[in-house]
Length: 346
Image (tube, rainbow, N blue to C red; front, side, top):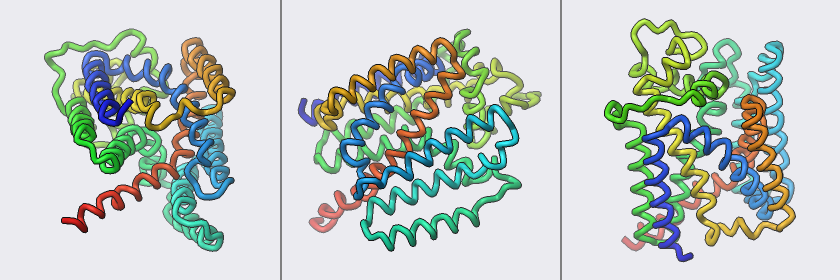
């Protein structure tokens, strides 16, 4: 498939994802996260492994994998026993150190510079750590709430579309980028009164747990929180809402749900649509078969026991996010280089 055809296909996938997100926001996110999510994580990890995770040395990915596993373990242990909370409070710093390490592995092979950069990053993060207000600190909110979720699935997806457009010098690429940004703005900002959406019983059950608490944190820590605050709400687990039902019925909360559903669904579909460009399907057959088997087991676990499935998907999701850091940096640093020739020739 040619690049213009891929761009037009992705434009259609964007519009389709946004259209379904308008009608079934919470249900679409749950379905995409449970079914498309694990297959995306597994196939992308296998694809990145064939490329040394886009770092310059063979074993640069090991610290990233260790940090992903440690942060996941601390999150799970904290859920079971509150005594792990003080240790788990260091997870944001670990995530940000992984981000810094990924940058170092992308820009230099010099061991001295890498060690020095790693030490400086660790020292700086130690200074940033504030145990007293850690859950609401900017460090925690960015590293643990936004970076592995909306920054990854929306911001970096947009940057990948921009980079592909600049590199391919494609008019259809600019069209897809404009549609991507337009769909994101529409799902987040357009009112939903006329659609008469009501969340299903399945959405109420699923959002009564960790997913619902995360959704509430997005509302609580953004400008949307003030708009969503219902009169007389008592807060609690789903602050600023009194209950999960109140959260799923609130117009602003539904708008956020639409945006999240669109961002995640298109993020997954974008990966699967670019087989001729990324060529992820050329990963060795043994790895692909293993990925499919684990994917089927993951989906089965998710539908048998939602919370355990969610925890397993959290591990896969976080590992793939952290292991992708070098690729994220490589793309981010390549965008100015793609713009530079045009500026010189202007």
